[in-house]
Every structure is written in structure tokens, then in C-alpha cells.
Image (tube, rainbow, N blue to C red; front, side, top):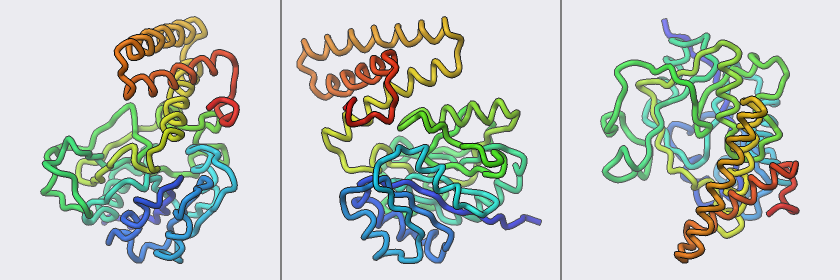
Length: 292
């Protein structure tokens, strides 16, 4: 007999007004009461839209942007359910999503992380506008997959595994949180599972409206977090080698993109380089105003 597990939904928003309505109005979420939104100090209508569309949704409206991982930790601190589904707002759920997810949890109730199969534009002739049926998939595993890495776009975790300790590393502001969590789960000797018959469509890079600031923010923190991750999980000698090599690579790329006037690649490369240099200089990722 399949057990119906209690699953709370936790998502983080930041200037997400363009996508939050579509996310919350999915039929799979209608009537789903246990939803917590942690808003990272949005400056648009994200929060007012949530309250208008779904007044039953619990919104934690923060006064400043504390980063993705820290925001999730806040949401999970209020989670009283056995399991929590962490999900990005730029996702669409397949039909029977929660039924399939529950079945997957029952099959792997000792796993540390469980995730649906994540699909994107490469798996569709054209992306879906609403939730989709399983037969629309272009790929499907024959069995559930054990993996070394689970994407932060959507996964299920059992908060009690951490016994009051932070789940996401709050030194990281953005990017590599999922790499870090996957490493933690592996060190705990627990499996990470991708389900064969539970799906989401992830638009990707769409949780916030694009802007020059958001581009700088994302790429700066990608560079910083990559260097932090290398340092945390490798020997001092290995981490220094990896970080120095990546700095040299981004210097070369920045020079090449400057010479070729390739602005689309120059800007991300430059800000990733700045993030890596900031890490080497001992700057914290949370010092956004000083660094961006």
C-alpha cells in the first residue's frame, strides 16, 4: 500500500511577478494548502500578486535579499511536515505530480534527496504553456536513477535529517547551493534519487526579470560560489590550483570577448571573474552592495 506523505511546498521569489501567477494557478497546486513563499525583498508586485491570487499561501516577506539558500532555510524552519518540496517558481508540474512524487518517496523512504525528472526546452518540440501529461515527454527513464547531484530547481528533502542544523550553507548567496547539499547528503551516506515517472518542466534563469543588475548579480555569485565550493571540498593545494586556473581562464575569455566586441559574453565573463577575485581577497558573498 502506498503511503500518502505530508509534503510542504517551499519556494523563494525575487522580482518574480512575471511568472508567479502561472506557477500558483497550476491545477496541481489548487487546494494545496501547505505552501510557503519566502520573498527576498522583491521590488515589484510579486508579493501583492501572491496575496491576491492565493491568499491562503503563507508569505514570508523579507526586508533584504539574503540569498537563495538562507531563504530556503527560513522557509524550512517553519515547515512542520514530514517532507518539504523545494521548487523554483519558473517550473510547471506534470499531471498527477504529487501522486507520482508520493509513490517515489514510498519507494525510497531512506533516501536523502528525491527529485523529479527535470525537463527543459531540449526535451520538447515547444515548451508547454500549462502543466503537461507524461506522454509529452521525449525522454523517460526505465528505472529510478541514483545520482551524485540533485538540482536545486526541484527536490524533496526530509528536514528532520538535519536535526536543527542548517540545510543550505548560508555562506553561499546564489549558485552551487545544490552542489553543496548533494555533497552533504553523500557524506551522510544517503542516496540521491531521480524519479523515472515524476516530471517538471523548468524554464531556467527565469525566476526574476532580466536586468543589468540581475546579470551582474548572478554571474558575480556564480564565480564566487564556484571558488568557495572548490575550497570547501578539496585540499588546500587542489583548491588553489582549481581557483587559479579558473581565474586565468576567465581573464583570457574577458580579453578575447573585449577584442571581438562580444558584449553578450563579455559581461557575464567579467562579473564571474570579479566574483572569483573577490573570493580570493576574502570577501563574503553577502557583501553585495560593496561587490556588485
